[in-house]
Amino acid sequence: MHARGPLSKAQAIGQQAFAGLLLLYPRQYRQAYGAHMAQLFADCSREAAAHSSGDALLALWASTLLDVCKTALEERIKEVWTMNAQQIHRRAACFCWPARL
Image 1 (cartoon, one colour):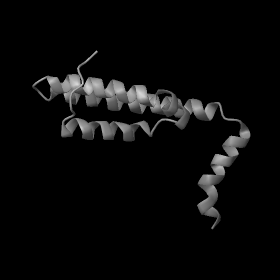
Image 2 (cartoon, one colour; image 1 turned 90 degrees about the horizontal axis):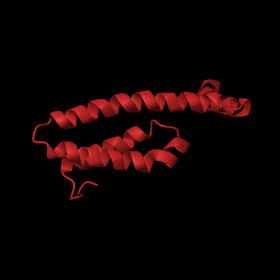
Image 3 (cartoon, one colour; image 1 turned 120 degrees about the vertical axis):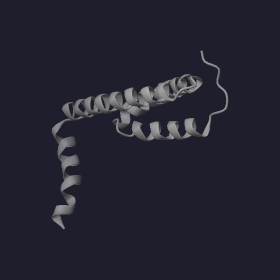
Image 4 (tube, helix red, strand yellow; image 1 turned 180 degrees about the vertical axis):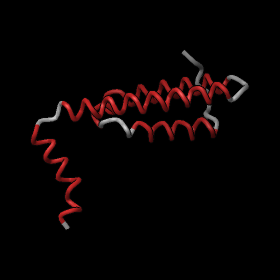
């Protein structure tokens, strides 16, 4: 387990940005895994910040962005795939509502 000291301003901003990225995931997925994902990112961020060069932090963000884009899209596809027809119709109506005005 990593020692947890106070966050630097950059780390705090990074964690807020990561929390924003978690919004790309479906709600149920975030509720189940979001806190664990945020903790893992915080731990990895601390470890990367412990290295004197910014390369470790840059590599962390690059891999994080790629992973979030890939897995969030996969989870959204799974969410739609498992919806029943009524749920799909209800969601489609939300997107079509402005066109009815």
